[in-house]
Amino acid sequence: MSVTTETVRRVAHLARIKVDEAEADRLTGELNAILGFVERLNAVDIEGVEPMTSAVDTALRQRADGVNDGGNPDAVLKNAPDADDGFFLVPKVVE
Amino acid sequence: MSALTALPLSDVAVGIKNKTFTAREVTDAYLGAIDASSLNAFITVTADAARAMADAADAAVARGEGGALAGVPLGIKDLFCTKGVRTTAGSNILGTFVPPYESTVTQNLWDAGAVMLGKLNLDEFAMGSSNETSAFGPVGNPFDEALVPGGSSGGSAAAVAGRLCAAATGTDTGGSIRQPAALTGTVGLKPTYGRCSRWGTVAFASSLDQAGPITRTVRDAAMMLGVMASVDSKDSTSVDRPVDDYVAALEGGVKGKRIGIPKEYRVDPMPEALEALWQTGEGWLRDAGAEIVPISLPHTEYALPAYYIVATAEASSNLARYDGVRYGLRVPADEIVAQYEATRAAGFGDEVKRRVLIGTYVLSAGYYDAYYLRAQKVRTLIKRDFETVFAGGVDAILTPTAPGPAFARGATLDPVEMYLNDIFTVPVNMAGLPGISVPGGVSGGLPLGLQLIGRPFDEAGLMPLARALEEAAGHFAAPGLC
Image (cartoon, each protein chain N blue to C red):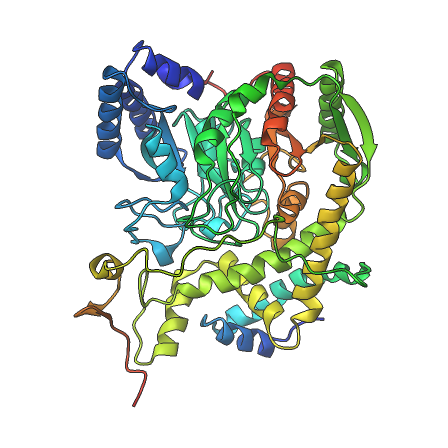
């Protein structure tokens, strides 16, 4: 499978990364080289093989469903590019 | 160069404990060395905080207290969040980010009395094999500053080899501790997935990322891992099992151990220096009493392509959080999606963009099964290869760490060619196993590394084997250093 420049632009939009024309052209070549490299996986017989979803064979621990952290709005907002009155500020998203 | 910076971590720890010298003296010696260095190994130097931590360690020692690493000056890869100290991940998007919390691994080190000298350079978001993708400039290799130190923990490896810290933390997603260790003549240990908490470590690929030390000796690596490893309620994938005494494990002996030599790691063409290194390493372990057995890991050639699907998919998800809303860079726009797109275009470098796009593509509707699901199934087969070999009575596996020595900056422009640097290290991450790189020899005056791969959570079993290689090979100091 290979991608077109149009696909690269669509994927870049999905990834929320702005790319200009020249960058989209360059990325098309680079992405196709990488996709060509991973193509060899098609040679592997994966019939009946379960996908690996955990690196270590262990059950996830559980804990009581209770609040164990929080109440630090100042620390949470400290790195915000724009904040006011305990909220993150962004451009208007609803009319 | 100061005599104090020439000491391995184990000697620094003993010297401070015995009051042969103070933590403050060692810390000042390192700060002086950092100041005089042109390697660009550090992104941020925390000189005042380091002196304060050193004084606190000296005071603790004077009271007859002090932990296992009391007063030992360390460098921290700038991927570990450090409370109140800028943490950049080597990226412009986090260029001014100051974490309000501390990563578990670094907290464990401070609890043991260690001193932080500063934050070490790395490939952006740990994506790279040469430290050239850092937004804070490339790092020189102490053996030749025009050459790369490897990556992504390039600053860590260069700082340890260049005597700018007693030891350093690194992280390893596909080889990012072991490959730079190999290229700088240092020891790099990637623990079993789940041995060290990932909490507070900037995420690249969550099912592969694991923290570990880069050190000058195997003993130093054992000391560092003993402190870094822990079970952590803040990381559900950290594993609840006791942390072994890795220093005691050094004395575990090599006699009768079965060492597997995987035929699939003999790449075509196999560079002569690499073949010689591998056979020499084999000989050293045999001389130490180990039994060498040929083994097969048939899915080895599929590890790297499967990795570049799994790792990029996870990266695309993990890096979605950098949106210019809660922290990090923001490039303002009138509309929110335009703001996201402009922020991420300006904040991410080329390699990060490539990987996020590949990851987004392989996870997108219609391609998920063909790429991501297939790669996860191949990952099962790669892990099974190792399980079969270990079940057959093999204690550890010996391979080269990297396909060649350090290379020149700008020499590898093709992304796929750069990815081949991790051909021997990636299968270990895919299977979640522990691996350690130990200096094994030189090629054209540049160090080469040997890799030992162990059973899950058998870092202790790797220790005597790694030490046997180290004792046979000797140490490889950069010119002008000892």
